[in-house]
Length: 337
Figure 1: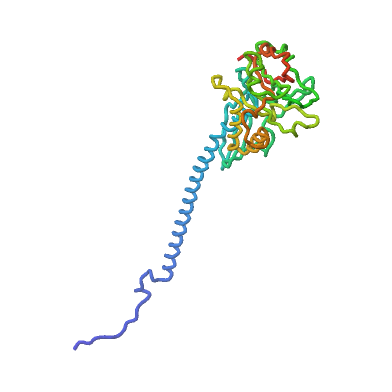
Figure 2: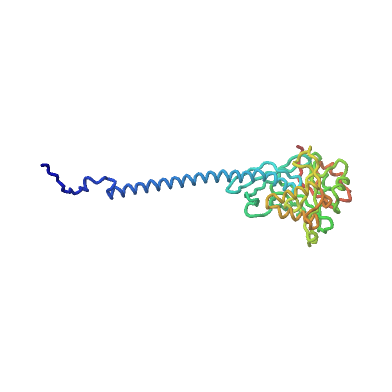
């Protein structure tokens, strides 16, 4: 007769237990899994940061570059409003984070002859901000004194005389009459000269009263308030510090371009309201002053207080004795081109 042994044999947990149920082994597996997860998470985070950084650089470059591409035209237009016969030449951008630097070289066009102009540096942002390095100041070089009469100013970069402008109806201690000095300048040179009128004239009147064959290169517009005219011991306005406003006869120094008019001047001021913040308030105030506070001037509101003319010393001598000229001030003098 067969015998069945029902005896229960104890489990040998030291030999028969699977490895994955061993507490020490399980802990090692979990630690390894945690390390892998940590490495994976860190790698994904680094990758995400890298992707975002690259995307940020691309977006910043596109955004900043887009603003930078518009600035030369906007700055060049503003320069033409405040600096007679000055045109933008070469320019260079340095792109940064949401902004950058803009270096602009300029040239003065004297009777068709280019002469070196000052170089300026700007800082700009994608939000429309435009400023001078160091937080402000004048965009022009500092003038120098030291001529025999002690009053004439020179541009310290170009070493050229700085033109002066005298408002009609305002009494000055003295003013220049440089028409009388034209005979001292070599006849083959080209000369730039500011003429200040005895009163304001219309655009049409100015073009009609100048000698035949002589055309202004830049029109000085009366943009000044009554309070600016009541200054005690007033100084003349100059072409160095951006306190005169007007418009060039030719746009972009192109002799084939049609002559600009007061309507073009107003259009440039209005477009400046959408340009860099540096000049918005200024352009808005000029528009209000021209329209007597309404901010909506017309071409007939643009009155001319003076002009800049260019030519040879001999050609400009024809202006001698003209009663509408109150003062005359030399600017750049260029040798034959």
